[in-house]
Image (cartoon, rainbow, N blue to C red):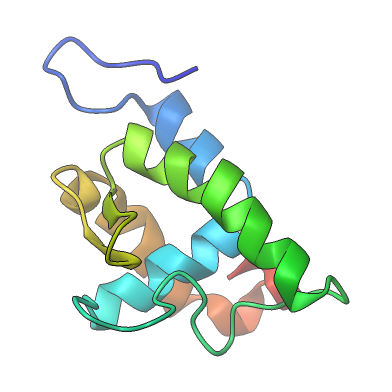
Length: 113
């Protein structure tokens, strides 16, 4: 469930929920530097896989769980037909959290970023 703040921006609870999954964090971190428009698998940056989960299972979870959640929060725009992901209208609200995690990545445990 997406909780919206009064000004239509996602709430802090929503943003923390979006960041609660490592795959979503790594996708958003990849979007900090790169905003893919036409990449074939933009939802799976090279460093996305953090566990032993097989690639096909991850792709299914991205399509049915992670990308819909990110899109619902407005932090990405997902074109299902073109299989492309780019920054959404609320990406700038989550940017400070992503930049903070990125700046302190060497201080955080393995798959936190």
